[in-house]
Image (cartoon, rainbow, N blue to C red; front, side, top):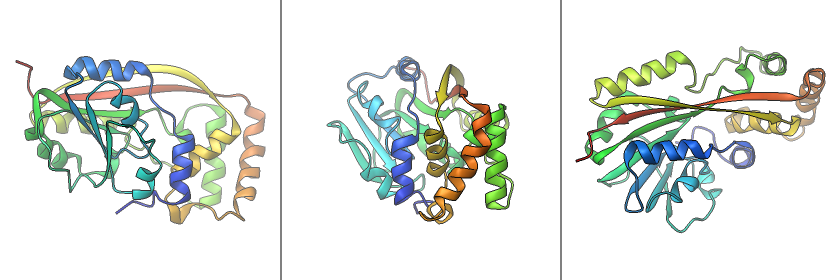
Amino acid sequence: MDLGFAGEVADFYASYRRGYPAEVFDDLVSSFGLTGEDTVLDLGCGTGQLTVPMAGRVGHVLGVDPSSDMLARGRPTPNVTWLVGSDTDLPDVTGLGAVTIGQALHWMDHERLFRTLRPLFRPGGGIAVVTNGTPLWLQDVPWSRALRAVLEDWMGTKVSATCGTAAEDQERYREALTAAGYEVTSTVVEYTDELDLEHVIGGVYSALPLDRLPTKDRRPLLEERVRRSLEPHQPFPEHVSVSVLKGLSSRRP
């Protein structure tokens, strides 16, 4: 099951989903004691926004995603293996330094997953749930509110998906990690970015399942509506708060 992240959606994802600051990878290396001897599993990896940078810090990364189209757009990297799979059919591997999940946990049964993963770690390894800022349509700034109004009118429904970034989502994940026996800590990395109209629209398209993506002949109409609504609010500043929620399976020897 690829959840609709296929075809053109995978192209938009590869082009417009932002990466993660270097501080995030520094924190993961420090928290789990990662070295060039370690293997990391990046679950729900998409086109590799976490996978490829992580490969520069460890020995090997397994990038796992249910969409073969997403994996096909991952950058070829010598110590990365791209695998089709999901949280219910994990690769047969043990001794992991870490499992990273970058803004994909809301698609998974996180309670079952946390329990299933625990025996797979080496001492000191664990899970990192990484969320990359509030979705474009839910930010508390004028341009985001204008975007949300256009999308709700276009789709005929409220646009409220948090993609696992809301405080209540994070608390559910924290409680589930604790219940599964992990020692839980968290880190927040913040930075400010500025988007242009192309990246706002591309970011929206990257988040739509293929069956909800406007057809090519309809896109100019939606894009013109977005442009007219957002233009009075230029520029489009974005304060990005990257949350790194970590569950340590056991202390290092």
